[in-house]
Image (cartoon, rainbow, N blue to C red; front, side):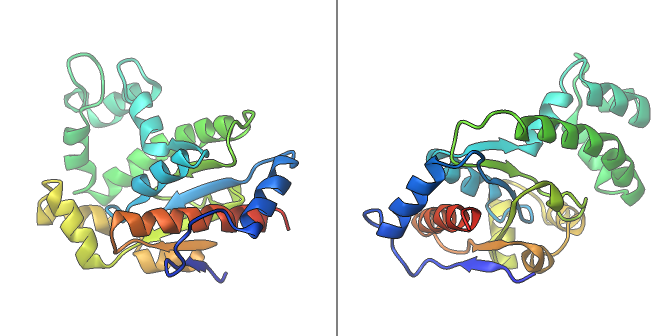
Length: 229
């Protein structure tokens, strides 16, 4: 599949004629596009999600779904306690995410087991959300392992957020991550280039926030125009 790379040479100002036409046509559509955003850790998925939410899209983060399921009494927290031991739970029954991460990112089999437990639950939650009535111009989900788990067919369009490895490492180090933790997390995901090759759209996020804002605006227009064909 050939990806559409969203360039940032075009600086958007007043809505163009094509932008207005796409919006008018979209308003008469019965359905809105469903979009999955992926990318390796530190590439900027969450920032792009916030920008699309500000433009009127409905946005959900699969990590937030996981956190909800890991709360005290949650389906996932109970399953993790049974599988990985009580020391992976806090006193209130919620998942001790730091402890769990220290186990699974050092043990490929442990990570595979966690994925077998959590992925069906998350996919079910996403499907329920995706089929609820829309209130925005699109339904957008942030899914870090979209291609790794084979969920891309669930969505109309896929977007990979990409950046250079040096940029990625610098961002993660600024969060206080150690080099060892960065290497483990990156090893648990596919390389950015592989994700980009499979996506319908690619956002290159090596520059500053205003550049990403322009790319997000161009992405919105590109998705709407493609959805109306």
